[in-house]
Length: 291
Image (cartoon, rainbow, N blue to C red; front, side):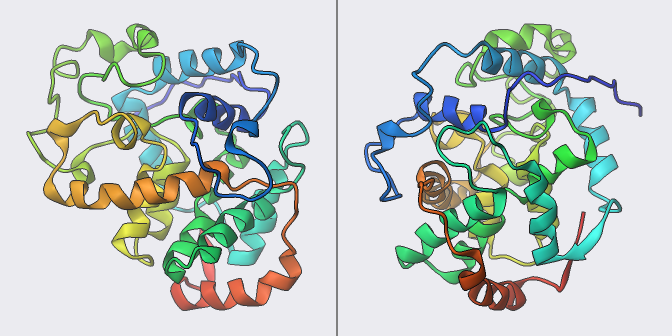
């Protein structure tokens, strides 16, 4: 199978997607202490055509076959292998100077997320989940376009929910003309469980697959579905869920605010925190990660 090469970068920075999320899902209580939730991602709230263009591309090219191709390409994890802390240095190549909320690098953002989780007394595996949840964005460093790295995720191979952002753009997707893929269950069966559903390709699935042998099931759901807003915020796709998914939903919902609202102007002291996190990494993860 050969995927179509699309070279397009609609967002000015990866964080524009998160800014759009915060407009769609404002949380009345910020996790971070730096400022109120409604002050986050404040660009003067213009209508951002770049986000709309991002979703036009995402919804046009995230086909069932495209996802299968990307899973085959990346889930063999033959691109790189490196120690976990070195992997953070690699991720830091995605530093974004245009983010209006923070000039922190990727590791510092992840530390803010994990430290907010730790401060609230959650289990250490959840702290580690916060530290690792954006590691999948290294896909950008392997040449993947933004629409195949970030963005709200959704099932492919079945009918699209109108709860997905910009659902009108799915009319451009080749799968839209496939009667099977546009039926309610598509290639799936009633209540088959999300573990049997193929999701659109991006950093969520990639980091889940990277860490699936090392974290508890609750943490793995946080990694795999934290961008599946049509499910955990809008309640869509109930016909595909099983009882296990319904039990895990509360964990995804617990994690989500720490991801969206943990940014603060105060940079975490990475060197001071490093011994704690190196011990935590050693408790759960192998010495090196494969990418």
